[in-house]
Image: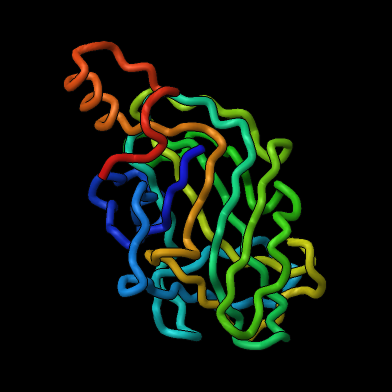
Length: 227
């Protein structure tokens, strides 16, 4: 298993093919309580497709849509369950908003090559509706909701964080406009994506090989992306 974290470290310069204006690192290291920040997303009248959170820290004000990109990885097939441990809050119970995530295979420059889990079609991730006080929420993509996808060496994973109608994510009610959601990222907790597979960065694999003086066997490397 590999745990990756939604950081606020800018990787836009090395992912020029990414669709989102703001592109942050899907990191192997958690942040700290002091570095945690909120990402705002205003609600829309539902039913609606999942809406990408933005980089705005101001409640009720949207900024640029944001997505997270991993380091280039050693070849791996993503096929198992994916669990997102998140933290968020909605401005009012009338928002009827719930979180969900998307996962994609990307080229080294961030261009999407394949969809591993589309939040609009994957089915309920079971996070239910957000509360009106900040709280932990969990999104779960079962293996059946994940399209088996092989990444070639040097390719990246992309993760998106969205809000959706609560009724689509195991709760009840459709989203109402005029409200907003704050999702926490870059913290010590509440911004973690757990993959069933062991993910090894290209840099990490090269470092291990150089130190050991032998070929790398990716599944046996440490289950994190090197800083």
